[in-house]
Structure formats: structure tokens, C-alpha cells
Length: 413
Image (tube, rainbow, N blue to C red):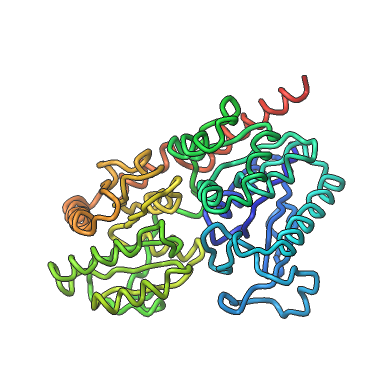
């Protein structure tokens, strides 16, 4: 098959970006041809055997890191790519686009999609998010699949001016994929017309990237500016945005630093619009052993997962929670809020579920998980095996491939 993938975000730095990159790589492994259309702020190097078609944007000064010289990006749109919440390279949201910018955005992607329909000639288009790019794809006369990632549904609630694109995308597409049961219910509440064309397909993690390994803990922490003297390590990784609930974690940190002073280090890996507020909260709470590490790529995250003792995911809402699964693949027990898709794979064998917005219960659960792991040296291996048994990308891609095949068979009749 020849599959054209589309995303509203670059291939790293967001859950849907990682999802798209993983799909592309694993489809190629199985002998398919893949092209990806996506936004970028930097010149892209090759991605093995995958055709890349970036649509370039101008990164704003607030998130400007590692850019190619401006003169190389002469065809870039004169603004940064928009997001539902935040991205390590963009704080602009879809709600920030004015009418002119939205037209430029849609025209640029429409041109890219038409070019690839003519040159790549895909059998099928798989768009990410029930949103405006999937709307463009669904109108091209080619069988199309859309994955609902959850943040698109948040955007639907927040920005009524974009609802027409989402609603028409649902009507015109061939199939919708939901990444969790909670995500499916949320999509059907907003798009009852999707009944009959929506399918549950839970995420898989990339087992080529996330696995158990030995890490030089002292050296890695030193590189990240974290002094280490044998303390236990609690880790959060993800966007620093309101629905992730990192402020709740900081309030839990205050409690366990008081209960066990000098015994626990907390690390926050990620960036986003709440970073300034969270650092101010750190000062207000007088947290002594909390460190903001900034955005980390996947290889860096694997090291952090492998040397940490507990992964905390205190989300107020989480459509799936892929980073929690990646952490578990590296053997890390997860303390997660009992919200969204997290309860579908986090259980007492591999961690704990707690109510959202309750620092006290979160604190107790983190301390309990630290004790459990210390009492059972084999626990990390058991958690890693749990992730490998049902949630690898290799298993996911076979299920996705079957959906593609069924869809093409239906359209050939």
C-alpha cells in the first residue's frame, strides 16, 4: 500500500507527532510506501525510506531554538504553526490565527496534499486529529482515516469557528480511529454522526526506542544540572499545559519533601505555556529538590525513564497517555490520575491510579510506589514485560494495517 500521513504538528514534540512518526517507520518495515505531510520550522534531514513533505513556518522568538538560518526558509509562512495547547517549538494556538493566516495555512497544506496526490499517488490518506487538515484530506476523493487524539476534541469545545471543518471531516472521511475507550466516547458525544465509522485502536509505543537499559545515573543527572547523592527520583514528562496537572504534582512534592526531607528528587521534563507559572509556584512552595529539565528527545527520555524510580502523570484529562506507556516499557511504575485513557492500561500491578487534583493522595501513592519498588528488585522487569506483552508498535501496526485493508476493500466494491 501507499499511505499518505498528515499531521498538524512536527514529528517530534507532541503525542500525535510521535504517533505519526511511529506509524510511518513501522509501515515501511512491513513493506509499505509512506509519505508524510506536516509543519516544520527547520530544514528536515531524511527519515529512512519515508518521503517527507514539510510545510515550513517561521518560528517565533519565544520558542526559537536550533533554527536553520532564516534565508534558507524563504518559503516559510510568516507565522508559527498553531497548536491545540502547546508545543516545544510553538506557543501559538489555532485560536490565535486571524482570517488571513488561516487562509494561508489551509492553502499551503492544500497545495502540499494535491502535489502528493499527483506525485506519490496514495491509496489511502491517514490524517491526525478531527480538524482542518483532515477536512482538506477528506475532500480529495481518496479513502481517508482520521485518528482522534483528544486535543482536537478540546479544540472543538474551545473554538466554535473551527467546528465546521471538524464536522465536515467526520462526514466525509471513511473511518475514525479512537485511541482509548474514553476518547471514543468523547468523540461520539461531539460527533454522533460518527456512529458506525469509529473504531477503537489503542496506541502502541515504539519498542525500538523505549526499553530497559543500564544508565550512568550520576553522569546523566550531572548533564541535566541535577546534583545527586543517592536520592529517589520522581519524574514527570510531557507538555507543561493546564490539563496535565503539573501544579498538582508540585503541591504533592511539597508534602513529600516535608515528610522525607532530602530523600527525593523530582524532575520535570517538558516545556509549554505554564512553565513560568510552575516555576513561580516552585518558589512559592519553597521546593528544594525540584528541577525543570526542559524538552527532551526520545533517546534522552529513555535514559530518564530508566534511571527514575516513579513516573508521575497527574493529568486532569488524558486522552491516552503514551508517555506513561513509554515509561512502563523502561520498567518505571506509574502513578496516574484516574482520568481519560490512563485507567485502561495503568493498574495496581504496574503502579497506582489516584483522583485528579488531590496532592495528598498523589503524594501518598508516590511514596507507596517507591516503597514497593525498593521491596521488589524484579519489579521493573515485570513492568517492562507488561508493556511489551500488549502495547508494542509492532502489535499496533498489524491492527492498523488490517483496518487499512478492510477500508480499501470496501472502496473497491
